[in-house]
Length: 230
Image (cartoon, rainbow, N blue to C red; front, side, top):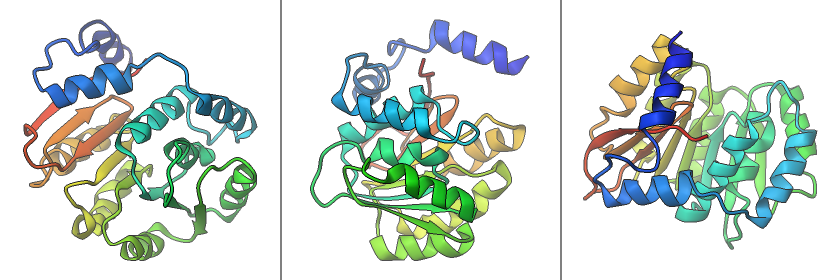
């Protein structure tokens, strides 16, 4: 019942920036998350979505707004844990920028090979797919970048806390943290509220229902905003 009521409520009362007094968050909602104009990158994302594994692939709606988010904040070094069938790294690197590089982690060798095949001739920037346990590969990727501009956690709820703890020493003012499935289970909701939103360096946290977005920029209001992308 909750999965029906909460999205409906947010569609009615948590869109168009209504009630949002932070200029930063109002701009994020109205000009990024809810932006409706088309982009050339959508053509490539739509084609990749059609070829991706339907059991693993990210919803096309999510792929589009992730692209818009990256297009606004221009992350150059990304660590992506769980690839959404390859759509997550493709979306976040589809904007044009020199020096852009991403490390995408998968634990299943078959999935990793499928993602590499999907990337062939479809990436606009280098995306390195690595296969191994997240607990091993994530620290290696973080160490290589030092302070990545974007970290994505798309993992089961019972692993969110332990994997985020591996990231804490690598967060910076410019880090954009994305967490998928923050309302997938009661544990995921508790982890989102008690760990991510309560992190001492977190300022703006956007609960976009299917995803959580965390900024660590000083000077922004420390507040949790609720939204839904449709």
